[in-house]
Image (cartoon, rainbow, N blue to C red; front, side, top):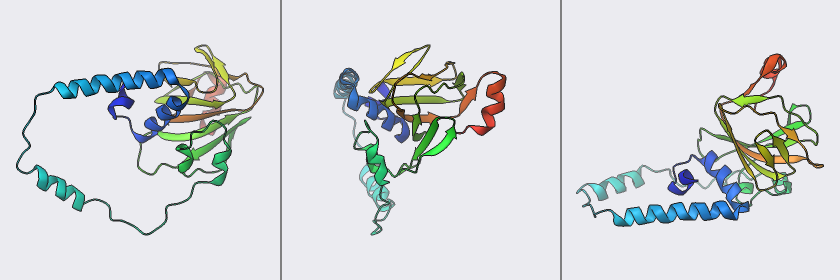
Length: 206
């Protein structure tokens, strides 16, 4: 949350945390506390004189910025509005169609308007889905929009946030009676464990 308050997250990470904050009052309060502390620290810093070239540097950056275009931005896929629990600001991004990635699992990519090391997508899993135990070569931020899942680290339902990385091995089970739909921000890939996992690894890409 401190990274979100400080504005140092890339766009993909920012979207995941912002999606969770829409549903979580407690975490919104935590972010506000970080922002208050940061503002207090900045206010306490001694003033510093601007360099003689500061204004010229700002003008140069404005001149080198992207030119205005009359081309209309691509419209988001209309069906993305049908995803329950998805914050309105995420609906502004274009999204692809649902694609099969594994039995009972479908993925829908979200197109970001600027480069980001973190990719963002929706993941839909049918009731009773069991994912092979896995870890991650990078990290995975998961925001539950509808349905629920569980693993050794706890139970996660609508509005909850889960984080996984290379230090975590978990076996996820969708335990809700409805589809579990999550917004996920990810760097790296899943690393499936066991013999079966290694056999299936080349077939699964998120």
